[in-house]
Length: 423
Image 1 (tube, rainbow, N blue to C red):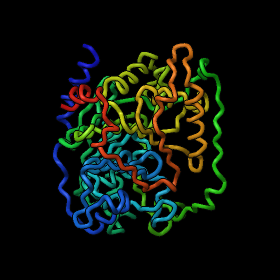
Image 2: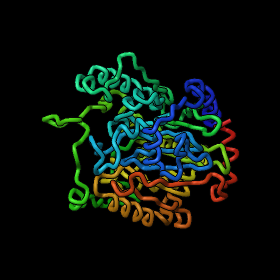
Image 3: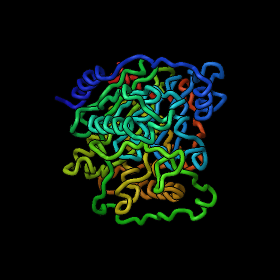
Image 4: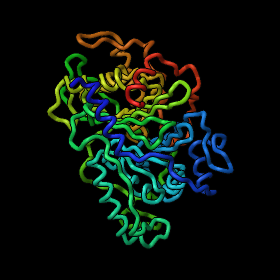
């Protein structure tokens, strides 16, 4: 069976797994306030809390987590909040704001804590549906049980989770499946948004690529960061435990490295499309920490699916970190960007106080790989995306606003790909 035929078959099968329809919302002052904080006062109806339906709004919440309003449908990409505190401080919001946001879905890249933490808690408190690998879904259910029985959470009326509470976690792709061989379709956001998910490669370290050689990485956090942006009382319990601290982490378990990438396609206007990946493997070798016996053919299959078969990308929300940067710099990130060819690239997942170093390193790697070399076709500057770099905390809650009706997002290749995957 050809890959395109396989992908269509899996799309049709996976669509049955996800429920349909918009989540019933009860408008409250707290919901309106949270949405105005995250998406901007000017974009939220002050009476109903509804978002402007002609816009796609992306708001960075730190690390590799983003809040998205796509034509009024609200969801999160990842749920981890770096340096989450008991009161707003360095991070200008608290976990209650995210619960009050009432997101309809959370799309988790993989089960590590710096991506999946808080997901089960938000789902339990807000009724949000979760999407992650089936392996990580099991870990989320374990986390829910632990939180229900946590004596400190039971003692706090807001954090307490009733014993009868359940969460819905939808497994994306078949457990243990090979990367880039299945594409799952989520129908929860139909007809406004088509959501696709596929298994990819989690980052890992491989030997230095002889085509490009060793490229040293500068990774020295700005010493002024702690002075300019002091940390308050962290929400995660310290030792000794401080007032207000609670443990809403997912915890370790299956699904930690099972990377799922997501594509969100607007079905209005010129079909503005967001592609999200929170980890990136050794694409040239086809190896990830979740797929250690991969081959170059596996890497190429992933690049072909993401760049040549799935709907064309307008905004790529991607990691700038990788377990491979120490040996190969930002080689994998450039290979990924060249395959996707987004119009805008938004960054995430960098160590604290090193955002500008990682950004400059990525730009340097783009320039280094601009010309062809051996089997590399080159990546001319004219084809590079506009890069929207994120620095924590100054870029948190700074909404990026896109109008899907703007002809800037028009692309003749979109229609056929959307018809294949989103019909």
